[in-house]
Length: 138
Image 1 (tube, rainbow, N blue to C red):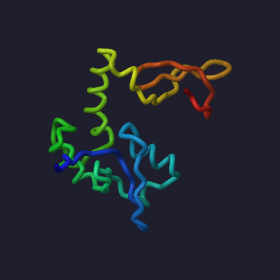
Image 2: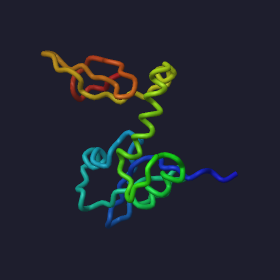
Image 3: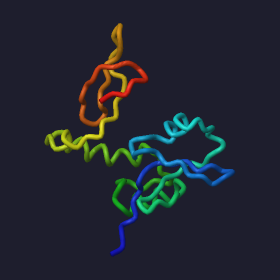
Image 4: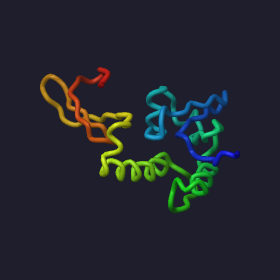
């Protein structure tokens, strides 16, 4: 049985070495990968990793995503926000029905600052937790 080719996550490919640095998930942007790996934009090629583990550039990724139904409108080059858009719509629909909360892989963003820390909110399910910057949030 042949697997349908899909886009797994954004990735960067170093121009000199050819080393591929994929994002931990589709929720990450190319800029977030660059910051986390401390890589300069001019030293890498932006692209995506497919579900088969192959690195493809943005043009090829756009064709794959359209064919797989991951994006509605055709685009010349796929951007990380294009790949997330369809997924977030699906997750948003799941959140309304309540089925997402049991399986949420939380991704927290700063929500509100207080004197002794911050409130963080999950971008997917809306769960709020209190903590300090740099601490691991449960």
